[in-house]
Image (cartoon, rainbow, N blue to C red; front, side, top):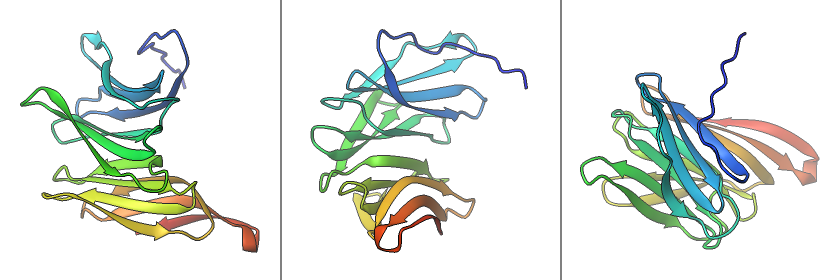
Length: 189
């Protein structure tokens, strides 16, 4: 396969956790962590756009996940290092600003977060808290955020979330049970 390489952003230091999605026209959108901040950029027919600053996460770099809604507007979930919380931001095209919220502040929330939107644009996130012990699921309805613990057995890693055409969620993740000395990949639906 003949790969084409483009430079989306030029920075003077290391970037972490780049997350890529393609919009309805096939244009790439990226979220990433750089110098303790969450950033977003995209490319259209005229080229890559100037990166937009989303949030200062305090110190270090932060896991983040990107999803695009039916109008190709970005939604980003990310972990705040200092607050040890999970945050969510989306682009409001009417107000032309990022709308941000914090919804889980307990137990080092937000590690390895994975964000999807259903066909109505509602956000769903799976993530880890309590030092990789607790796999957690969150969603936002018209009134507020809700969270649910999924798996607290052993150590959980690298959750991935997708939604099917019926708006059913599917989750995969790695699990290690020290008592059984066993690594597994789990699938939930």
